Image 1 (cartoon, rainbow, N blue to C red):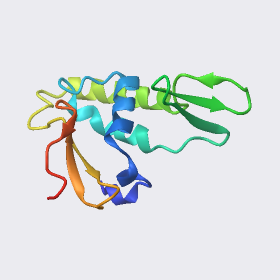
Image 2 (image 1 turned 30 degrees about the vertical axis):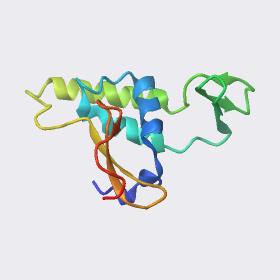
Image 3 (image 1 turned 45 degrees about the horizontal axis):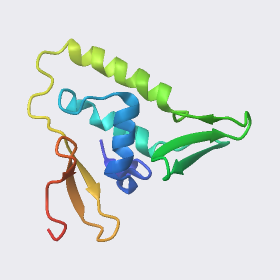
Image 4 (image 1 turned 135 degrees about the vertical axis):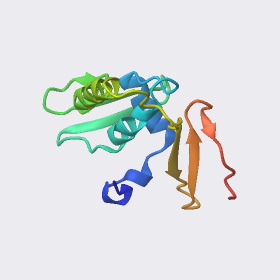
Length: 132
């Protein structure tokens, strides 16, 4: 797996991944091995005809589909990632102790400095200093 092969992999923020964690109902403390699915969902491009709407007044995100004129509470890709998550949960259930040393930490690229930083979803904060 090479993250540089995935478009926008380093452009995603912890907040965007947290939105997907919430939508996919991933428990970061019990299922940290599932965080990669939330990240992929966060960087997945929208299909043609869809737009993302961030409503900062109500602190929510919605997706609008131009063809049907409706606003939807979840991304059009969410059903795909829910199925992927369900399949991976089933696969992990058949393997003893999948957690091992997996933690709730994910690497992100700082958009200002370009430096890679570690974000801990259990602590809801970066666990390294921005200076390095």
